[in-house]
Length: 203
Image (cartoon, rainbow, N blue to C red; front, side, top):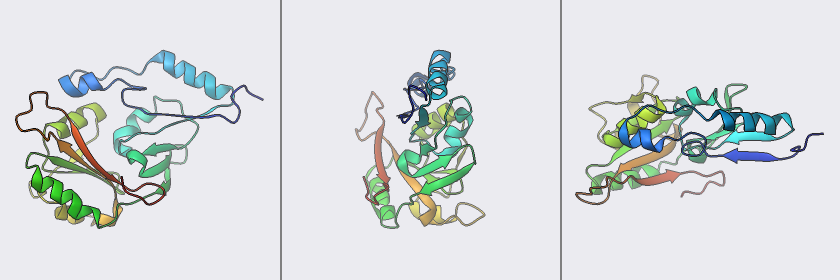
């Protein structure tokens, strides 16, 4: 019997386990994960605790960091869009976005000409429409490749961005990035997220 038997601890990743805010804003190198935190997590698990990460990142954006974080429970990825078991390398649960989300996302893009969209697909690839500076920042902090294309100017293009014929129903998360203020000097990141929850709701 361990002192943490029956306890499940779930933590965010960015700016909780790993400080990524400064690298995102400045382009400086990603710092290492705190060894003190790693040791604390191992102690927790060695004494019966179960630990997992819950992150908004897509699987390819978290995979390379997952090896550095001790976990003994499935991770939540895509902001709740999927549950992934790194031990067996498979999805345990997935929730795809409904077709009705596409026109809503397109409406945001139409209203904000400088906004970009990242779509997280079942093929474990991040697709970008109208990439902007925030897309580049995400690439820097995640080290995950984003599939770009000059033809990807509308959300309707996402149905045919891969050779495998990615369907819209295979999209787990739609993330629109940009600033809603004209001439904003702070370049604040504004996110419009349309995500299917476990209950099938959208938030």
